[in-house]
Structure formats: C-alpha cells, structure tokens
Length: 426
Image (tube, rainbow, N blue to C red; front, side, top):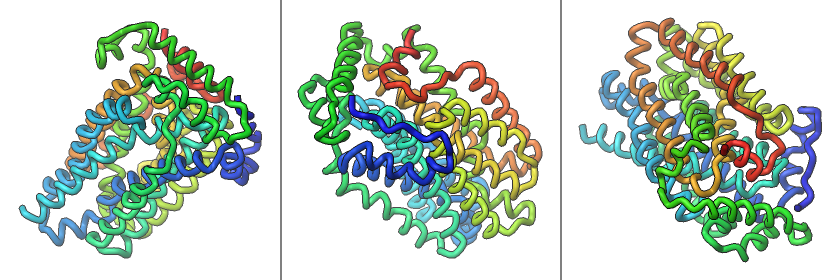
C-alpha cells in the first residue's frame, strides 16, 4: 500500500500542515478531484444560505406573505427529495405569480442538483482519498459548504438579492470543465468489472512511484467477496438484516441536523435576528466568521480526535446554547461547522459496501430531504407561534441525537473502507 502520512497529535500543528499533507500524500489527479468536490460543496453552501439574508428584500419586492416565502424556502428541499431519488442510481451507474413561479422553479432545480451532489461528492472523495487523510480530505471538502453559506451571508448584507443569485451561480459553472479531467473512483471500477484499471487509477492518485498493489488487492478482494454473495434484489437488498445497523446509523445521522433545526436556522436566520431586535448585518457577519473558524477546527480534528468524539462535542454545545438570538444562532452554526456539518456525510459514505451504496444513498438522501422540508416549511409558523417553544423543540431533538451517538455510533478513524464496511455488516 502507498505510504500514508501520519497526522500530528497537536491540532495547531495539524492546522498548518493539513494542506501540505494532502498534497504530499497524493498527486495532481487527487488534488484536482478534491478541488472539484470542494467547489461542489461551496456551491451547495451558496444555495442553502441564499434565502437567509434575502428574506426581507424578496418579500418586499415581490409582495410575498410568510406562507409564500415559506414555500420558496422549503421548495429547495422538495428538489432535494427528487435529487435523492436520482442520486442512488447515479452512484451505481455513472460513478460518483409569474415572478414567484420563476423564483420557485429556480429554487426547485437547485434543490435537485444539490440533492444529487450532496451524496455523490462525499462518496467520491472518501473512495479516492488515502486512508489516514480520508476524514480530513472529506471534512475539508465539506468545509466549503460552510464557507459558501458564510460568503452568501456576508454578501447578502451589501448585495441585492437578484445580483446575489447571479453571483451564487458562478461556483457551479466553474465545476463543469473540470469534470472532464478528474479520475474515476477505483472502487467503482472494481464494482463494474474494470479490475485492470484499478491499479492504474490508484497510481495516478498516490503517485507513480508509490506501491499500490496492496491497496488495489484489498479493494478487489473485498469487491469480489461482495459479488460472491450473489443477491439480485436490487434496491431491496439494502433491507437485509445484515445492513440494518449501518442503515440505521446512516439515516439517523443524516437526518439529525435537519430535525435539529438546520434548515430553519439556515433559511430564516434574518427572521430570528429581526424578531429579537438584533441587527441582521451584525448577526450574519458574526455567524459567518464563527462558522468558518469552527469548520476549520473541525477539519483539523476529524482525523485526530475521531468522528464520534466530534459529533458528541457538537451536540454538547448545541444543547447548552442559551436562548438568546445572536448567541444561539452563532453557536449553533459554530457547532454545526465543528462536527455535524460534515461528519454524518463522511460516515454515510464510509459504511456501505459497493453493492448497496447507491440504494443507501437514496435512503439517506430521502431521510435528510424530507426532514429538511418538514423543518423548512414549518419553521416560520412555529417561530410565530412561540420562539421559546421552537428552540426547545429543536434542542430536545439534539439531546436525543447525543444519546444515539454515544450509545450506537462506533469510531471509523484510521480504518480502510473495507474494514469499516465489514464492521457495519453483520
């Protein structure tokens, strides 16, 4: 196997060397693939964050009611549901009023696109990254989701909502030409019977002078083992007893951030600030800074402290957040950036074998999207009903998530994908 770069024990030292470690442990092919994944995550963040700083101006310019804007905010998640239905099959097949109606249609189409990329992106990065850098690489890629949200929040304080929509489309356009130059996942190649290409792609990813024979052998052996089990039930195969544990872990972890209020906080942040007399500009800028700093810290710690410990730490801060608007929202996004933003996607992309990865992606995507829609559509109405009750409701869900993670979620740090998938399939 290619020589892995060991991470330093000190988070501060790891922070300064993380990018160089990724660069040294891989090649231009991996860096290019990582860049594409990160651009996709950044575009995801721009789309998610768009409705928060633009709420008052859109409602004023288009004369929208709370119900109209709730539809606009939540219709993104309807697109996510449609995208989730598509993404699983794509994972297996291809590798990894008039103005108001136009507004809603655009938001729906954005939801479909990110519903596909939200699962495919982490799966692709996870499958091509070196073992000991897998968490950091995937987490850093997902960090750009938070960066995208933060950038849109900051720009939304000075840029009109129509111009902000145009600026938000730029990252997506940048990705298209790069897709022609990135390598395919070696694990997908093994799955579809292109075994001879596995070692060639690994050499491109790890460097021509690296010995990738052991890594290629492990991938091919495990893929063959999965194929020998011989089950042609397609999507229904995921619901076998041996996948019950991994399916439960993946679905619950992916749904937890949404049921904890993520879509509500993300889409309607301006309403929260305005209702309590906090300047929305100050709130958005403070939230942006905290979210990016916490995201960087989470990226550094994910392969040092592990996935499980960061998830637990994240929930600890969320349940201890005071019900003061600025502090609450700022700490919520900070804790989200620290753990719950990227780690559920990392774990979900690690735990499923190649034969059910597509079906699992659909299930996880549906769980996340449906949960997101429920929260996104109901949040404004809940907030009008009772601010305190809304926060307590989401805090209760967060507390339940803490117990779930503490009791059931094992650590995956430092293990190969094949070792992790064997651990979760019994």
